[in-house]
Amino acid sequence: MELRQLEVVVAVAEEGGFTAAARRLHVVQSAVSGTVRTLEKELGVQLFERTTHRVTLTAAGTAFVPAARAALRAADLARAAADEARGVLRGVLTIGTMQGVWLGLDRVLAELRAEHPGLTIRLHQAAAVDIRAGLRDGTVDAAIVAFDRQQQRGLTVRSLACEPMVLAAAPGRAFAHPGRVRFEELAGLPFVDFAPGWAVRSAVDRAFRAAGVERTAVFEVNDIVAAAELVRHDLAVCVLPESIAAHFPDLALRRFTRGQPRWDVAVACPAGEPTPAVAALLRHLG
Image (cartoon, rainbow, N blue to C red; front, side, top):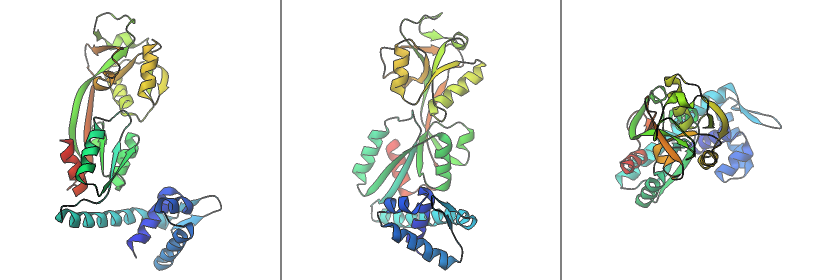
Protein backbone atom coordinates (compact mmCIF):
# COMPACT_ATOMS: atom_id res chain seq x y z
CA MET A 1 0.00 0.00 0.00
CA GLU A 2 1.41 3.39 -1.01
CA LEU A 3 0.76 6.87 0.33
CA ARG A 4 -0.38 7.97 -3.13
CA GLN A 5 -3.12 5.35 -3.06
CA LEU A 6 -4.30 6.65 0.30
CA GLU A 7 -4.27 10.21 -1.02
CA VAL A 8 -6.41 9.20 -4.00
CA VAL A 9 -8.98 7.37 -1.85
CA VAL A 10 -9.26 10.33 0.53
CA ALA A 11 -9.68 12.72 -2.41
CA VAL A 12 -12.49 10.61 -3.92
CA ALA A 13 -14.23 10.40 -0.53
CA GLU A 14 -13.98 14.14 0.12
CA GLU A 15 -14.85 15.25 -3.40
CA GLY A 16 -17.65 12.73 -3.84
CA GLY A 17 -16.53 11.39 -7.20
CA PHE A 18 -13.66 10.33 -9.45
CA THR A 19 -13.84 13.31 -11.80
CA ALA A 20 -13.71 15.87 -8.99
CA ALA A 21 -10.89 13.95 -7.30
CA ALA A 22 -8.93 13.92 -10.56
CA ARG A 23 -9.28 17.69 -10.85
CA ARG A 24 -8.07 18.12 -7.28
CA LEU A 25 -5.08 15.84 -7.83
CA HIS A 26 -4.33 17.23 -11.32
CA VAL A 27 -4.49 13.82 -13.01
CA VAL A 28 -6.83 12.16 -15.50
CA GLN A 29 -9.92 10.38 -14.20
CA SER A 30 -8.74 7.01 -15.45
CA ALA A 31 -5.67 7.28 -13.21
CA VAL A 32 -7.86 7.85 -10.16
CA SER A 33 -10.20 4.98 -11.03
CA GLY A 34 -7.28 2.65 -11.70
CA THR A 35 -5.58 3.52 -8.41
CA VAL A 36 -8.77 2.83 -6.45
CA ARG A 37 -9.38 -0.49 -8.24
CA THR A 38 -5.81 -1.62 -7.60
CA LEU A 39 -6.06 -0.78 -3.91
CA GLU A 40 -9.46 -2.47 -3.57
CA LYS A 41 -8.01 -5.61 -5.15
CA GLU A 42 -5.03 -5.48 -2.80
CA LEU A 43 -7.26 -5.05 0.26
CA GLY A 44 -9.87 -7.55 -0.88
CA VAL A 45 -12.74 -5.14 -0.16
CA GLN A 46 -14.75 -2.59 -2.10
CA LEU A 47 -14.23 0.94 -0.80
CA PHE A 48 -16.80 2.75 -2.97
CA GLU A 49 -20.26 2.09 -4.32
CA ARG A 50 -20.35 3.37 -7.92
CA THR A 51 -23.61 4.42 -9.55
CA THR A 52 -24.30 6.46 -12.66
CA HIS A 53 -24.78 9.65 -10.70
CA ARG A 54 -22.61 9.39 -7.61
CA VAL A 55 -19.89 7.60 -5.69
CA THR A 56 -20.38 6.75 -2.00
CA LEU A 57 -18.31 4.97 0.60
CA THR A 58 -19.09 1.38 1.54
CA ALA A 59 -18.93 0.30 5.17
CA ALA A 60 -15.33 -0.77 4.58
CA GLY A 61 -14.56 2.55 2.93
CA THR A 62 -16.08 4.48 5.83
CA ALA A 63 -13.76 2.64 8.21
CA PHE A 64 -10.75 2.97 5.90
CA VAL A 65 -10.81 6.72 5.14
CA PRO A 66 -10.14 8.05 8.69
CA ALA A 67 -7.20 5.65 9.00
CA ALA A 68 -5.93 6.77 5.59
CA ARG A 69 -6.13 10.42 6.70
CA ALA A 70 -4.20 9.55 9.87
CA ALA A 71 -1.50 7.78 7.84
CA LEU A 72 -1.16 10.74 5.48
CA ARG A 73 -0.95 13.11 8.41
CA ALA A 74 1.74 10.96 10.01
CA ALA A 75 3.70 11.01 6.77
CA ASP A 76 3.36 14.80 6.62
CA LEU A 77 4.65 15.04 10.19
CA ALA A 78 7.65 12.87 9.34
CA ARG A 79 8.48 15.02 6.30
CA ALA A 80 7.96 18.18 8.36
CA ALA A 81 10.33 16.90 11.06
CA ALA A 82 13.02 16.26 8.47
CA ASP A 83 12.49 19.68 6.93
CA GLU A 84 12.55 21.34 10.33
CA ALA A 85 15.91 19.74 11.05
CA ARG A 86 17.17 21.53 7.95
CA GLY A 87 15.45 24.77 8.98
CA VAL A 88 12.86 24.48 6.20
CA LEU A 89 9.07 24.20 6.41
CA ARG A 90 7.17 22.63 3.52
CA GLY A 91 3.82 21.01 2.97
CA VAL A 92 0.35 22.43 3.53
CA LEU A 93 -0.95 24.33 6.55
CA THR A 94 -4.76 24.50 6.63
CA ILE A 95 -6.14 27.21 8.90
CA GLY A 96 -9.80 27.27 9.79
CA THR A 97 -11.67 30.45 10.64
CA MET A 98 -15.25 31.44 11.31
CA GLN A 99 -17.16 34.18 9.55
CA GLY A 100 -16.75 37.42 11.45
CA VAL A 101 -13.40 36.34 12.93
CA TRP A 102 -10.34 37.88 11.30
CA LEU A 103 -8.14 39.60 13.90
CA GLY A 104 -5.41 40.75 11.49
CA LEU A 105 -4.96 37.26 10.10
CA ASP A 106 -3.85 38.70 6.74
CA ARG A 107 -0.76 40.23 8.38
CA VAL A 108 0.07 36.99 10.19
CA LEU A 109 -0.24 34.92 7.01
CA ALA A 110 1.92 37.36 5.06
CA GLU A 111 4.65 37.16 7.71
CA LEU A 112 4.42 33.36 7.80
CA ARG A 113 4.71 33.04 4.04
CA ALA A 114 7.69 35.44 3.95
CA GLU A 115 9.48 33.35 6.58
CA HIS A 116 8.57 29.98 5.02
CA PRO A 117 8.03 30.39 1.25
CA GLY A 118 7.93 26.61 0.77
CA LEU A 119 4.87 26.29 3.02
CA THR A 120 1.49 26.30 1.28
CA ILE A 121 -1.11 28.07 3.41
CA ARG A 122 -4.79 27.33 2.94
CA LEU A 123 -7.65 29.16 4.63
CA HIS A 124 -10.90 27.31 5.31
CA GLN A 125 -13.84 29.46 6.43
CA ALA A 126 -16.73 27.50 7.90
CA ALA A 127 -19.21 27.23 10.76
CA ALA A 128 -17.99 26.32 14.24
CA VAL A 129 -19.22 22.72 14.04
CA ASP A 130 -17.36 22.12 10.77
CA ILE A 131 -14.12 23.67 12.00
CA ARG A 132 -14.22 21.59 15.15
CA ALA A 133 -14.79 18.45 13.08
CA GLY A 134 -11.87 19.44 10.85
CA LEU A 135 -9.57 19.86 13.86
CA ARG A 136 -10.68 16.45 15.09
CA ASP A 137 -10.20 14.55 11.82
CA GLY A 138 -7.00 16.34 10.74
CA THR A 139 -8.36 18.25 7.74
CA VAL A 140 -7.78 21.52 9.64
CA ASP A 141 -4.42 22.06 11.35
CA ALA A 142 -5.24 25.13 13.45
CA ALA A 143 -8.10 27.59 13.69
CA ILE A 144 -8.79 31.18 14.67
CA VAL A 145 -12.16 30.85 16.37
CA ALA A 146 -14.67 32.18 18.88
CA PHE A 147 -15.57 28.84 20.45
CA ASP A 148 -17.59 28.49 23.64
CA ARG A 149 -16.31 26.32 26.48
CA GLN A 150 -18.04 23.16 25.28
CA GLN A 151 -16.56 23.50 21.78
CA GLN A 152 -13.05 23.85 23.26
CA ARG A 153 -13.06 20.40 24.85
CA GLY A 154 -10.31 18.10 23.61
CA LEU A 155 -8.40 20.95 21.95
CA THR A 156 -5.43 23.10 22.88
CA VAL A 157 -6.80 26.64 23.02
CA ARG A 158 -4.95 29.92 23.55
CA SER A 159 -6.73 33.25 23.92
CA LEU A 160 -5.82 35.94 21.39
CA ALA A 161 -8.24 38.74 22.22
CA CYS A 162 -11.14 39.53 24.52
CA GLU A 163 -13.26 42.63 23.94
CA PRO A 164 -16.78 43.90 24.62
CA MET A 165 -19.60 43.59 22.13
CA VAL A 166 -21.64 46.74 21.53
CA LEU A 167 -24.98 47.71 20.09
CA ALA A 168 -24.74 49.46 16.72
CA ALA A 169 -27.66 51.72 15.84
CA ALA A 170 -28.47 54.63 13.57
CA PRO A 171 -27.39 57.94 15.18
CA GLY A 172 -30.97 59.17 15.32
CA ARG A 173 -32.37 56.22 17.22
CA ALA A 174 -33.17 57.26 20.81
CA PHE A 175 -32.35 55.28 23.95
CA ALA A 176 -32.82 55.99 27.64
CA HIS A 177 -29.16 56.77 28.32
CA PRO A 178 -26.48 58.25 26.03
CA GLY A 179 -23.78 55.75 25.16
CA ARG A 180 -25.40 52.92 27.18
CA VAL A 181 -28.21 50.46 26.61
CA ARG A 182 -30.11 47.85 28.61
CA PHE A 183 -31.07 44.46 27.18
CA GLU A 184 -34.69 45.15 28.10
CA GLU A 185 -34.73 48.17 25.75
CA LEU A 186 -33.99 45.90 22.80
CA ALA A 187 -36.86 43.45 23.26
CA GLY A 188 -39.17 45.25 20.83
CA LEU A 189 -36.61 46.56 18.35
CA PRO A 190 -35.99 45.07 14.88
CA PHE A 191 -32.67 43.22 14.74
CA VAL A 192 -30.32 42.28 11.96
CA ASP A 193 -28.76 38.92 12.77
CA PHE A 194 -26.07 36.89 11.08
CA ALA A 195 -26.77 33.40 9.79
CA PRO A 196 -26.50 30.44 12.20
CA GLY A 197 -22.91 29.22 12.32
CA TRP A 198 -21.43 32.72 12.38
CA ALA A 199 -19.31 33.29 15.47
CA VAL A 200 -20.95 36.68 16.03
CA ARG A 201 -24.41 35.10 15.93
CA SER A 202 -23.43 32.45 18.49
CA ALA A 203 -22.01 35.07 20.88
CA VAL A 204 -25.10 37.27 20.58
CA ASP A 205 -27.42 34.30 21.12
CA ARG A 206 -25.55 33.40 24.32
CA ALA A 207 -25.70 36.99 25.62
CA PHE A 208 -29.45 37.34 25.11
CA ARG A 209 -30.15 33.93 26.64
CA ALA A 210 -28.12 34.91 29.70
CA ALA A 211 -30.06 38.20 29.97
CA GLY A 212 -33.41 36.41 29.61
CA VAL A 213 -34.45 38.72 26.78
CA GLU A 214 -35.81 37.71 23.38
CA ARG A 215 -34.97 39.79 20.33
CA THR A 216 -36.88 40.13 17.08
CA ALA A 217 -34.69 39.23 14.10
CA VAL A 218 -36.21 40.97 11.08
CA PHE A 219 -33.16 40.53 8.84
CA GLU A 220 -30.66 37.68 8.57
CA VAL A 221 -27.52 38.31 6.51
CA ASN A 222 -24.12 36.73 5.89
CA ASP A 223 -22.28 39.98 5.24
CA ILE A 224 -21.10 42.52 7.84
CA VAL A 225 -21.28 45.40 5.35
CA ALA A 226 -24.90 44.51 4.56
CA ALA A 227 -25.70 44.49 8.28
CA ALA A 228 -24.10 47.92 8.68
CA GLU A 229 -26.14 49.31 5.77
CA LEU A 230 -29.39 48.10 7.34
CA VAL A 231 -28.40 49.71 10.63
CA ARG A 232 -27.29 52.93 8.91
CA HIS A 233 -30.75 53.35 7.38
CA ASP A 234 -32.37 52.72 10.78
CA LEU A 235 -34.04 49.51 9.60
CA ALA A 236 -32.61 47.51 12.48
CA VAL A 237 -30.01 47.42 15.25
CA CYS A 238 -27.16 44.93 15.54
CA VAL A 239 -24.76 43.66 18.21
CA LEU A 240 -21.15 43.47 17.03
CA PRO A 241 -17.67 43.08 18.51
CA GLU A 242 -16.32 46.56 19.24
CA SER A 243 -13.36 46.16 16.84
CA ILE A 244 -15.70 45.26 13.96
CA ALA A 245 -18.18 48.02 14.77
CA ALA A 246 -15.32 50.54 14.78
CA HIS A 247 -15.02 50.08 11.00
CA PHE A 248 -18.34 51.95 10.68
CA PRO A 249 -17.72 55.32 12.42
CA ASP A 250 -21.05 56.79 11.26
CA LEU A 251 -23.01 54.34 13.44
CA ALA A 252 -23.86 55.08 17.06
CA LEU A 253 -22.31 52.50 19.40
CA ARG A 254 -23.56 51.73 22.90
CA ARG A 255 -22.22 49.46 25.60
CA PHE A 256 -24.54 47.39 27.76
CA THR A 257 -25.28 48.53 31.29
CA ARG A 258 -25.10 44.94 32.63
CA GLY A 259 -24.24 41.49 31.38
CA GLN A 260 -21.77 42.98 28.93
CA PRO A 261 -21.42 40.50 26.03
CA ARG A 262 -17.81 39.50 25.42
CA TRP A 263 -16.09 38.56 22.19
CA ASP A 264 -13.38 36.01 22.87
CA VAL A 265 -11.14 35.02 19.97
CA ALA A 266 -8.63 32.21 20.35
CA VAL A 267 -6.35 29.97 18.35
CA ALA A 268 -7.25 26.29 18.62
CA CYS A 269 -5.37 23.21 17.49
CA PRO A 270 -5.48 19.48 18.25
CA ALA A 271 -4.20 18.50 21.68
CA GLY A 272 -0.58 17.39 21.89
CA GLU A 273 2.65 18.62 20.39
CA PRO A 274 1.92 21.02 17.50
CA THR A 275 3.36 20.31 14.08
CA PRO A 276 6.28 22.55 13.03
CA ALA A 277 3.96 24.52 10.72
CA VAL A 278 1.39 25.07 13.48
CA ALA A 279 4.19 26.03 15.90
CA ALA A 280 5.35 28.64 13.37
CA LEU A 281 1.81 30.01 13.09
CA LEU A 282 1.52 30.22 16.89
CA ARG A 283 4.76 32.20 17.06
CA HIS A 284 3.48 34.74 14.54
CA LEU A 285 0.16 35.06 16.35
CA GLY A 286 2.18 36.20 19.40
